[in-house]
Length: 384
Ligand SMILES: O=C(O)C(=O)C[C@]1(C(=O)O)C=C[C@@H](O)C=C1
Image 1 (cartoon, rainbow, N blue to C red):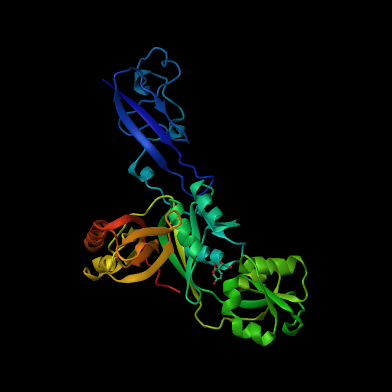
Image 2: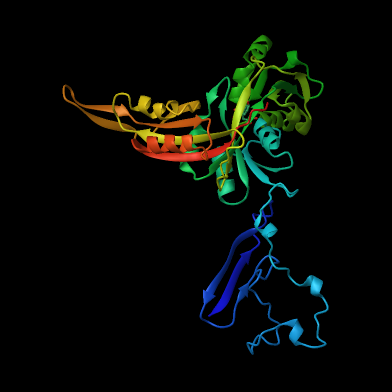
């Protein structure tokens, strides 16, 4: 019995950070000459592989430089080295740039969140939230950073729905305090402005200042798009609510800083990736799940009790209609048949999936949930 080695190496992800080993297999085979299929600059497998010279490939004789007197290989250094255990570790933060997709233009707060999580990253702006998901699924980006909730305007429902429709995993969260600035073309004063453009959340959060100015408000897709629009169209009667970084990128002046009504306007973003991370217990982890329940009195109470019983703190609960099953038909002996809206419940709780309490709670929930999916288990962001 001979050994056949097949190594498929060099895991490229569209020129970005992750480069490492995808698969490395050594298997037994009854067939003769042993094939080494190597890609991406490596060849050879520790221990077992034999590199053949061109001369003896047809004869099937073994090739060992020690068998060929006086013909010692001159460029031993250039020969491929056997893999070591270090080759099996993919290190995305080794200086090569991790690519992060986000919705918006450069200078948006979502890009700030991506840069907070990965300061050296290369950001990948996307038109829509769904494009940011797809960019990761299609390996155009390594991760996506998307807003999920805001301290003043609440949940970003679109992203809850997309989490379920796509199969990415939550691998992190980022809390970002957005500082809204009023921007305009250089030389323009605040009292010259007739309208102000921005993301609806930024406009709503800057209500006091905008009301004082008496300007009309115009919604655009993101704060940086507002700045870009004012700048590229040379609008002298329009301002933008956006970040100081957007002012710099698009060449606008900051007329007023910190114009948000609430001093702390915090947005929580999720970091999504193709693969989950390994849950740990040596630091604070959070787990996000989504589930559905049967109809009946106290079922949601029972679902929440699986966490309360184990002293697991819940940090967020959200319900969304089930699009594919919008109504549930229930028998009602008095009035015939009743119809109820059917919901998906999203819960974030403070425990790692490596913690037996979390495993038991989910095992318990699974006994009566009609559907349950773990969206991700990730380190908590306690910084601002
Ligand atoms: O418009 C932006 O700059 C965004 O990144 C989007 C967004 C949001 O979706 O809520 C994110 C955070 C800010 O508070 C305002 C807007």
